[in-house]
Amino acid sequence: MALNVENLVRSGVVLAVGLPLTLTVGSLVNTTADLARNSTPSASEVVQQELKDTLTVPCLKYLVTETDSKLERTAKNEIDEIIGGEVSHGAVCKWVL
Image (cartoon, rainbow, N blue to C red):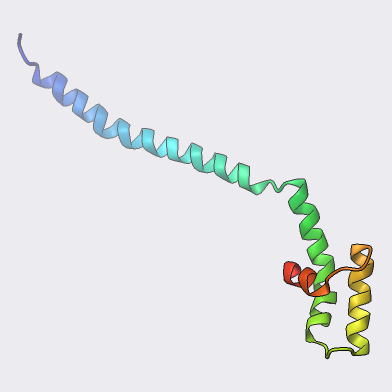
């Protein structure tokens, strides 16, 4: 059985050129799939972000005002109206911010 050097060299060149291309294409496909999966927010994430956006200003007002001031009570009322009832204002603002 004769060992053909040309066939060995040809196989080595194909391996040396083909393997990096195969790995690059595979990586590109995986990256594209990950981006597509992560770029589409779920309905829950959309609703949460909208609620956080709405509550940001009242929560900032609540956190920076003096205790038992008119501005604090106004901020609490705004938070209650947005949520739809009495809530733990500190916990809500911690979640928002």
